[in-house]
Structures are given as structure tokens and as C-alpha cells.
Length: 171
Length: 166
Image (cartoon, rainbow over all chains, first blue to last red):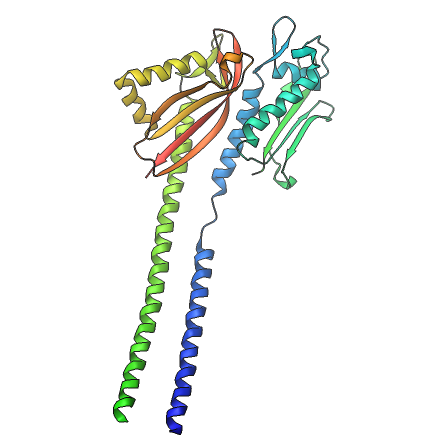
């Protein structure tokens, strides 16, 4: 009787051990599953970001706006006017100041494109003195990521002066 | 008593075999899932490469690029060429089969999102649409300027390239 009890006890212990081993194994497999999972390639992300930042600026500049005098001005003309302080007598829709107008339109375009596609970005237009004429930071937290070369927009009247346009896509 | 003991031994052996079968089963499930995941990842990687290759082809097509006084403009598409391209693909089997050998199972959609001409605002053109499968898809949306040579104005648009794969 005592021997049978002892055996029952050892069987229970063995059963407990087996359960423990199974639980450890399950956790081990789950851990392996997560650790072996490959992180998504950053090459694709970087390539997308690079294309979008360069095509956004180069596509934006020749676009016509509703600011006129003797023809319709493009975004490039208005940015030159406002960030490069080139004196021109321009009137925009509803007699709006062209520098206010261009900022509004830039925000509108960013909303329709990058914001709509949930990109985190940092968009800056710097005048030749290094002052920021236009700046939008949309959830770009890590400034270390900001490595993109600026788009240089030469000013028609200044020699060697450039307006710098940066568009960093962070995520 | 001896018979009971023997039965317990058999039960123990059965339990051990079952235990190993369960462990083997778990390993098998885990391994097969890992393999499926690897295959899916490889498929996705290949699809990304194909998508960007096709994107490069699309941006270099002379049939769509805009020129100003003979000079090519960067990231610019000609509205008249776009419309003509879309019409040709829809009306001619020869043209459709030629471009299907380039773009394969894809759809390309162009939308004007900023225009000083109200009539062109939000205008959407399906440049190419051929889906041989819709199981998996990848898309890439990028900005372009769209030049309207009739009105001599440039608009801002988005090209959405969707690539479909098995």
C-alpha cells in the first residue's frame, strides 16, 4: 500500500514535470518565432522616402498659382518672392498677400499628399540668410534622421544666393 | 496486482510516446509556419523590387513626359499625352498587349489634386489597368507636376502605381 502511494506520488511529480517541460517548450517556440521574424527592410522605406521628398519639391515648384500680374505665377516665383525678398507687385486670389497665400497653399498640398498618406515629415524653406521662411514639422521626432540634402533654388537677382528647401520624410 | 502494475507501465509508455508526439507536432507546426513566412517575405521582397523597377520605367516613358521648348522637365507628365495614352490602351488590343508586357498585372491612376483651373481639379485618369490577380498588392504613390499644353498651365498631381502579385 505504502509502495503504491509512493509510486502515485512519483507519477504525479513526473506528470508535473512533463507539464512544466511542455510549458517551457511552448514559451521557447513563441520566443523563437518572434526572434527569427525578420525586421522589415529599411531599403524599401528609404527608397520610398527619397523618391517622395525629391519628386514632391521638383513637382511643386513649376505649379501655377492664382497669383497674377501679367501672367500666372508659379510656386517657385512666390517662394523666390517671399523667401528671397525679391520685390514684385503680385496680387493673389481675393487680394490676398502672396506670402500668406503661398504658405496656405503649401499647407493645403501637404495635407492632400503627405498627411493623407500618413507620412511623418519635416518641411523647411530657408532664405539665403538661413532664416526659416516656412516650417512644418509633422511628427518628425528624431532629428538625427534628418540627413537629406536640400533642394537649392537659385535666386534670380542674387549671385550665388540660394533658397534651400528641405523635405525630410521620417517615417 | 502484477497485472495492474503492468497496465500502469503500459500507460506510462503511452504517455511518454504521446508526449513526444505532441512535441514533434509542435515543432512541425512551428517549422512549417516559419517556412510559409519565409516564402511570403521573399515574395514581398521580389514584388517591391518589381514595383520600383516598373515605377522607373513609367517615369522614363517618352510617351508621357512633358517637354517645354524641346527640353524635358523633371517629374512632369503631359496631360494631353496621358489622355492619349489612356485612350490608346483602351481602344487598341495591340497597344494594350504591348504595355501589358511592360507593366504586367498593375494599375496606374493619375489624379490632379491642385489646379488653378477648376475644371481639372480632382480629375482622375486611369492610365493602365490590368489585374491578373488581386490576391496580394503593393502600391506606391508619388507626386508629379502635370502640364496642360492647351492652357499652358502646370498642375500638381499624384500617380498611384499598384502592383498585383500571387
